[in-house]
Image 1: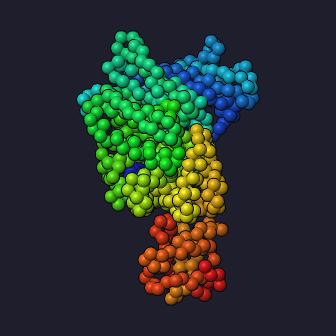
Image 2: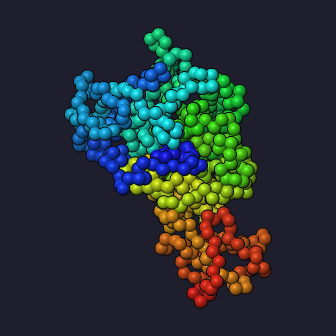
Length: 558
C-alpha cells in the first residue's frame, strides 16, 4: 500500500501530509465509533457481504444495496452500520420488514429484534447519494471520477484508513471480515467493471447498462474491496507456483495495452520471489490481478490497483537513492507484497499498521535481493533511512481509527532488516517469515501476535527490539571508545533492558559479535588498525564515539 494520510495504502513517503485529526486535541466521538468495537458491533460477526452498486459517471452518483449476513454471537443491542456523509441510507429491511434507524454522524444504529445467539441472519441496507470525491487519491479516500487520455469515463475507489463506508454501508472496521463477498457493479455498457475475486458473469441491464458480478471466495478486508470502471482491455497468463496453477489477469486501459504487456511482466518474478520468502500466494482461489487506476495504486486484494505510469521506480524515482529502486516497478512490487502482509495477515486495529507497511517496505528489499543479490537488497533498505523522520511512534493509539507515524514504512523496513541481522541465520529468518504467513493466513492479528511469533519461531527474545523501534522515536545509539585493541561500549537512547546484539568490523573481512547493554562493557578485539573498526551498517543504529568511557566500563569482556 502506498503511504497515505489516514492510510489509503500505498506509499506516501514522498509526500508531506498533515491530517485534520493531527490538529485535534484528542479523538472525537466519530473517531471512537469508527475505531472501537462498540457494543453495537460486538454481538455480531459478518459472514457474507452481498454488495450491489450502480455507478453513474454522468452525475457522479451511486445507488445500491448491501445484504449483510451475520452470525449472532452475543446478547444483541442495536446494530451499528457505517456509511459516511454525504451518502445516506434509504431503507433497511430484515425478514421482509422495514427496520427503523437513527444516524449519529457516519454511523447508523438499527434496533433489530429477535437476534438469538447462534443464529445466522441477514439485514439489507439500501443507500444512495453522491459520495465524497477523493481530491488527492489515493491519499485521501473517496471515489475518483476521471477520464482516460481518450476521454472515456474512468472510475475508481480508494478508501484505506478513510474507510470502505465512504462508498458502501458496512461494519467499517478491520476487526471483522466476511468469509466471502459478492461485488456486483452496474455501469454504462460502453465501459467494463473490475472488482476483487473472479468474474462470474455479465448481465445486460436496461438499455445502456450492464452488471459485472465478481465473487471473492476468501475473507477480505472491507477497505480492500474495490470498484474500477473504465475502457479496459484484458489479457491473461498463468503461473505455476507453490499452490498450483495461479491465474493472472491484467486490466489496463485499452490505449495502454502494449505498455502493460511489457511492464507487468514483472508480476511473474515478483510471485516467484515472494513465494520463496513468504510461502504460497494467499489467494489461489481468487487469482492475481493488476488493474490500471487513475491514482497511484493500492493493494486491493486479488486486484492490485496500478497507476505508476508504466515506469520503474516510484513515479520514475528511486526512493532509496541507490539506483536499485529503478530496477523494478514500485507499485507492482510494493502493492503485491500486501497480498501477504495486509490482505492475508490483517491487523485488527490500524494502530498496528506497521505489520502491513513495514513488511511491504521490507519486501522491496527482499525482491531486490532476490533479483540482484543480497548486497543489493541490503543497500536498498539502508538507502531509505534518510526518509525516517522519528516524529512520533510507529504504533498509534488503539481504538480511535488512527495510525502512528508514517515511519512504519522506512523505519519499519529497517527494523525488520535489523532483526534479520540479530537472528543472524538466513534459513531461520526465511522459515520465520514463511511460518508467520502459514500460521496467520487469512487471519486477523495484533501487532503483539506478530512480535511474539517472530521471537518464538526464531528463538531470539526480540521484545525490547520491537519496543524500541515501534514505541519510541529514538534510534539506538552504540556508544564506544577505543583504547588500542580494547573497546569500551554500551547502548544509549534505549528503553530499559535493551540488549540487542550487534556486529562490528575488526578488519576488512572480519567481524565479531557483541552483546551491549546500557552498562559499559569492555572487550579485547583482534584489531590491527583502529581505522578498521566500524559497526555493521546493516544494523539500523546510531554510532557515537565518546571521549572517555573507560572509567565507567565494567570488567565484562566479549
